Amino acid sequence: AHGDWLIYLSQDAVPAHNRWLANLTRHLLDPQVAAAFGRQLPPPSAGPIETYFLEQTYPPQGFRYAPTASTADESHSIRRIFFSNVNAVIRHSVWAQCPFPEDLIMSEDQAFARAALAAGYSLVYDPEAGVYHGHRYTLGQLFRRNFDSGYSLRGIAGDGWGAVARMGLHY
Image (cartoon, rainbow, N blue to C red):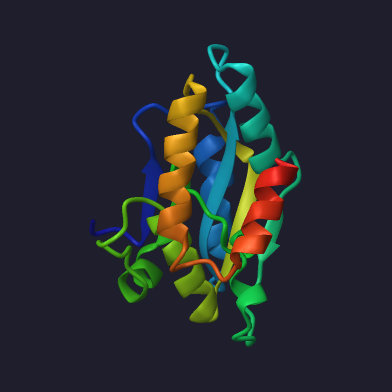
């Protein structure tokens, strides 16, 4: 890619409206922002498990993760480094400084988020940059996907197994 901004949209994600891209990219006008990601809304075909997951993971309120000087594991909690490149824009210069690791099954977006925050940048979640994206996973498929995600996150997120178990039980 040769542009200043890298736009990510998974092949099965569909913008929710014609302002999607403008809403997503407006955050990179602030040079402190490394990347922004948007809300994922359940498509009409999504089942109740996927709908619940998307509603819990992608709330209607936006937020901004600011960099922290702390090296404590809490500063790298999955809740603090959550970022999805299903629907995102990344500043090319920051991605060049903090590229996606190639040795992960998945969660390269969380690894990028942790590195970008550690490099002193902010990340923005904008629910107004929404896309329809979802899958009708069986319970077994959902377990396997979450297992792979958890396995990948073990070296990225600073959460201990107890904290991860509590998040899982809460969900």
